[in-house]
Image 1: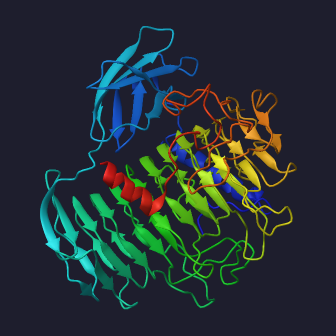
Image 2: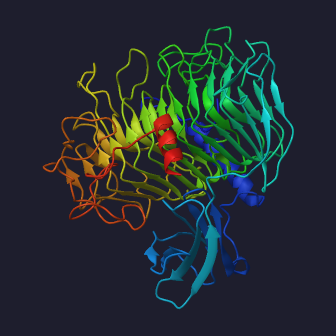
Image 3: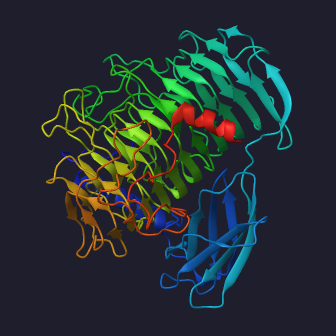
Amino acid sequence: MSIGHTESSGARFSAARTEAVRLLICVLMVSGLFSGEVRTAADADQPPAAVATFHCLGLYWKPAGGDAGKSCEVQYRSKQDSAWRKGFPLWFDNRNGEYRGSIVELQSGTEYEVELHLAGTDQRARLDATTWNEDFPIGKRIFLEPQSKKRLVIDQSGNAQGYVLYLPPEGLDAATIDVAGQDDYCVEIRASHVMLRGLVLKSPAIHAVVFGEGVHDVVVEGCDISGWGRIEDDGWGRDYDAAFYSKSKSLQRVVLQGNRMHHPRSNSNSWKERRARHNTFHPMGPQCINFFDSAGNHVFRYNEFQTDARHYCNDIFGAGSNFGERGFPNRDSDIYGNRIDGCWDDGIESEGANCNVRIWNNYIDNTMVKIAVAGCSVGPVYLWRNVAAASRLGPEEPAGEPFLKMGAVPGSGGGRIYVFHNTILQPAGQSREGFIGCGEGLAQSGGQELGTVISRNNILQCRTERATAVRDKSQAAGSSYDYDLFHGRIQASEGQEPHGIRGRPVFQSPPEPGVFSLAPSSPGRDQGVELPNFNDGYQGAGPDIGAHEAETPAMVFGIPAWQQSRTRN
């Protein structure tokens, strides 16, 4: 069990445990290892830099004279456009004198020009950056056997000009590797600039796909993975056994897209089922994606995990080292378009650095917490247009938990958390209230500090009016909650939600798959605030509150989203 895991609202961190973590961070800061230490003026006046993915750019700038009182304005344009577009301002981190932030929802394979400007000064900087191309060049094709019972070891590297592609035989849609529990892994990747496509991976004793040391630039797409994970002698699963697994700190630029993961061999206990041998109620069991302390710059998109009640995960996407400077997915990474369904802890556990991590357009169902950022040590992390469905603590426990679990590394000061345009649904079900969605909206994790949180345009629909739509007891300077549609309580510093709307959403009727937009008569329709780069091109008099803007196409997740993206590209 990782120290980064936090307990539910009924069982918080102990004071001793929190103090131990605080002391550890203090030791790291004194030794100069923790990035939270204050930088000197000599570190300032550095040119801007960008780190790309398919649809985003992470921006970094250390200008001389930068401070929290000077906003860093952003504008950008593709090299084919003459008109500039306004970006969302960068966040200033006073711990190291750096402005950081992201430009999102860009076109792939496109060169952009970016201009940064310190408001109220004549300081400007420009840079060029190109988003990743969707078409990876193929230098060599390796056709696999239609059926195999042996581990596939990938040890032939390509290069940036030509990837090595492993794929089924010509004329077949899939190649199956079924090790029937007789090997620890189905696939072991020891090479870089490689692609895997169309594999069916079954019944590895531990992990399905393992990434080795020094690996980078890997694409795994269109695979079907099942039956992974050990079962311990108490009948529950071994913690962290995963469909995709790595403990390499050098692993970077891994793209996992359009993969179907389902029915691990093992099962996780829930928060209501004690693991006696480990002396814990914390869920322990299989996961889908588990990258410990990697170098980051990953993209996990259009994947899906769905299962039955006997094959639940601990977390679905996540890892350990949640209170570290790395964690999962670390930095400059995107998680979007996924359908996530079936775990007893966090659907997406994005904890650790969270440095320019972007999480959007995911549908998360049948989990305890939907998204966890309770160890945001560096920041910023952006969460927008995610949709949350059913939440519960155990098989017979209908109590709902938060949509978003927030927090920071004790003693670090915490990174910035942006929460825009998310929707909490309340499906009907057998609970005391008759609803089975999240019991809270945005919730500070018990016993933890909290960095600054900026919340805008979210539908924070809790089960009851007694529930807490926002639970932020830290009263951190700079945190701001506003323009949200909510009906529960606000536990935060005074003056929050001055433009918030108290009420329940009314969605379009009759319901259609992927349509979560508000009806014309609903509170929140056209009543959001403009957020440059995050709700450009809205319909009507103003942006709609929530994940789905009215009169726009239905939202699509998982494999259908992957198929749609391939058609589009």
